[in-house]
Image (cartoon, rainbow, N blue to C red):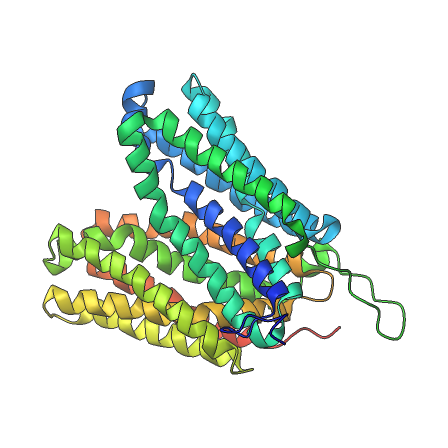
Length: 403
């Protein structure tokens, strides 16, 4: 009916409100994640510290975010996803704003830890809310919109942070961005009805108890999904953080062209996510979508490494790799959702998504070693091989566990 659905999209208003609220929260998470890096030059001079010390602030943030993600998955199932999401959003915003007021470097580390703990709630809470409040026929597109909202936060963060920092200083940038997120958080508190998940109604008898954390951790399907995220994160870290240097040293690309390659990877990835959402909603064989996209991305990465062609061709292959990976993302999230037993959605998403943090820690060690040994073409081999290995994990996650 027109009164309950948007005329142009066909999405029920309740689902659209949920998707909007969750998307705003995910946008805020990514907006604050990249707020610090553009300010390092200002912070180094003002605080009289090294870049290593500032890097330690980021490491503290991501360490707490990764560890907290597993814990958040447990708390989501126990206390409710909407409560964890709102508390995490307010905590991350307040901690970021407080970093702008910190008089000494030493205070940045505990504040970064608090911001990381706030950041840890998003994936377990967001995806649990979407899984419960969006109809299965539209869930693929909902997961795609969630990813794109986060990508928009990543894209805007260095622009906003750098502009405010250049005009008013690094403290003003962190204070303004943190307080803005706190204000948005209170707005979502008022709008929390769009985030609440109703308890599941029993079907013909008492509901089976939800599995505990150790039981979830022991499920082979969850371990395979975790490994999927570890492998794809290793690949992503190679492209995002090391492709610019590799293209310059091994492919005779200019700085501008190498930077464009990473930007086009992100653009291709976002376009692939949008297309993948529609694909995921039109098939039940999500493992085939994930396996196909991973295999194509692996092949493109190997071609980029082995072909002796003008650097513009290599850049095009990198962009196509991003698109292939993007297509897999909504189907990947639907596979993880299908692997989650009733009452354990938060735990499963928390464990599985922590694989991204593990891969993000392992990948730079591998790719940095390759560049130290002047093997830039092997950077793309190192990014491609994990994707090929991940094909098997996607096949293993294809079915929901019994019970």
